[in-house]
Image (cartoon, rainbow, N blue to C red):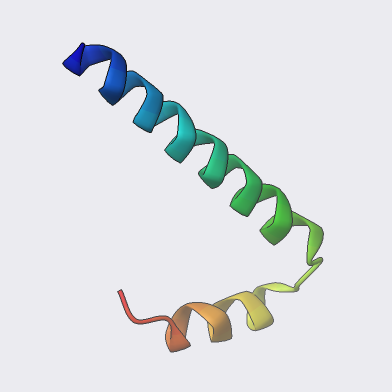
Amino acid sequence: MVSRLLEREFQSTKAGLAAACKKANSLKLDMNDWEKLNESETW
């Protein structure tokens, strides 16, 4: 049961990351714009 719950959570996270990557790739930013985004991001 635990492994099934973990698998479901990983699939959900994977889908979310894939959607975020697609959205980021569609922005057509040049590298300077991308660097500005990274600098303002707080990890």
